[in-house]
Image 1 (cartoon, rainbow, N blue to C red):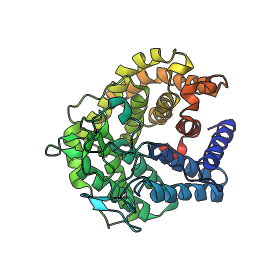
Image 2: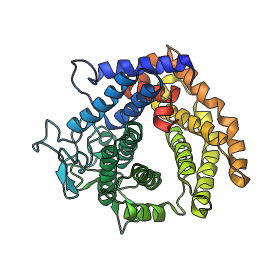
Image 3: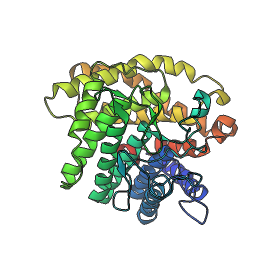
Image 4: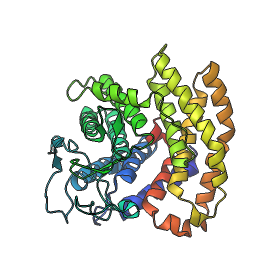
Length: 374
């Protein structure tokens, strides 16, 4: 990370903190995906610069997410901590009932007809947002040497597994109601089982490293996700999905046990899937700014930062051959940065209408150590 990248990432995160009420007198405007990346960004900036201030911002983001998104909405007839058939949240267990997405519109009522377009704007719970928050809590546990963050993350992982899996643990819902009582979108996210598997394994590894023995073991969740991932197609042309595959490949490489055939096979599948999708994704990056979504492309840039670390790690055989082939795509990261750092491109409605998530993920891509680990 260059000094200029660090300075720009810090400026973006400072502005986000003021704009969304993490810092200063403004109201707390929380959105789970963005806040997961923001928390990790603050941790990364703390490790590289103004430690006390950015550590405080990371912990304040966590506290506000739990104060806002672990509680029912102000326009809901239900009040207080989230509660439902899979658990009740409380002070010592703030995420035991999951976390709301933070969308502007309330969730769809049980007797309300499904509207695919409108569903994107409605609240509820997304599994892939929950895994991002598990990761943010786990990064807090490791950076702050505070096991309770990891215990919270494992409690969230346990609840999410029980709520989102169905059909004997071989399928998952994509979106659930705020209380996790009913599915809002019954189809399965392509990479949700993979996210669940690697996140659960990472949480368990952190618990072991910190000597934390209380809380869920996640054994059943890991077994279910492993079965779901086996033989499932992972290739995608979506830049955000491709970035996720590359981040997952780095995580799996770090979690792998020497001689574990299953890990090697899955790692090769992740790299092969990325290789299959990147040529198609690259062509979509020629569209004008109004037709592009910055945060999705920046997700790919973050994945390419993970790929840089993976290429530098020891590897041999087919894994090394796939990494050598993927090396050709590393310049895309700087191309994505250059495009979205151009002032004219950041005046497009596709950027300004999603300013928080775009700027936070730009900061993550510029200074990825907080999200990826050093």
